[in-house]
Amino acid sequence: MARIGTREGPFTLSGEAHVTSLVGKTVVVTGGSGGLGFQTAIALAGMGARLVIVGRDRARGEIALNYFRQASRDAVAEAHYADLSRLDEVRRIAATLAEKLDRIDVLVNNAGAIFNRREVTEDGLERTFALNHMGYFLLTRLLRDKLVRSAPARIVNVASEAHRGARLDFTDLQNSKSFGGWKVYRRSKLCNILFTRELARRLAGSGVTANCLHPGFCATSIGNNTTGWFRQGVKLTKNLFAIPAEQGARTAIYAASAPELSDVTGAYFINSRIAAPSQEAQDDEAAERLWAASAHLANLNE
Image 1 (cartoon, rainbow, N blue to C red):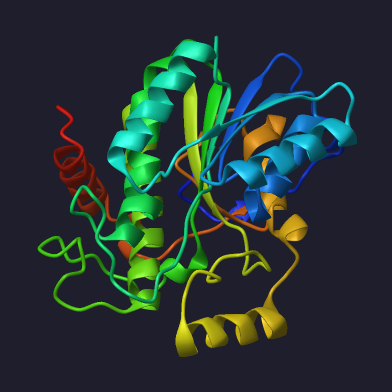
Image 2: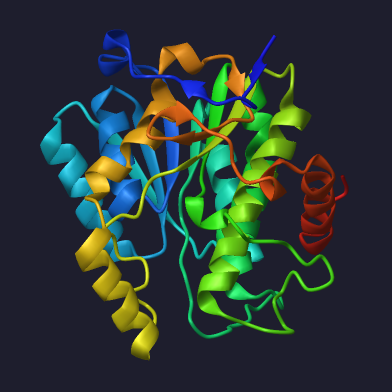
């Protein structure tokens, strides 16, 4: 029976985990052409996995592919491109992956951003919520059957400690009543954890685990798309406190590959250890409600 990650406790990387073999496994990493996703992808490729990255920028994707192939002559890597804030693009890339890939052993949902101005997507969704949550939700939901057929398989969702103090307003998931870039980003990270919790419950007994994590505040391109004082504040904070992306990726790499986590699901990790998220992130009723609202927005029958 799977162990649900509801308690705090150490899951330190064992000696065996350092040499984990992913030969014969297929790993999909969203946002894999830069930052945390890139560092996660290159580590998993180094374990022998067939690597599939999903990104928005074709030029960055090609640079990443060249790097993977130069780092290891045995690397098998490919890139696909989509704007994961658009539901039609998520559907298109999910259909492509389901058709082209024989199996998916690990799905790492990593793509995300922060916006300091409210933007609305073609689907009528606030862009932070659309990219950071709905992208995770819909891509995972559409690839679920492929993951189950590939079991044992893993889903790893990159969340954040930024979720602490956030609360969801189910009457205003699109943040139309009031908008603040940081507040809305924090809510989206709370969504990541609630989504993981409900996903783990729904996948129980399938052989597919679902876990999420806090990577740390990392020196990546996040916030570079913002403007004015907000952008300057993000830049200053990165300069003072950010850790290298390579260090931040370690927990995602661990969650995706460590043998000792084969039956752990529904957990939240910090520094490769199970940690307790906020009380709001442990609300099973809110998790189920968020799932239902997300399915409705994506026009899915659940």
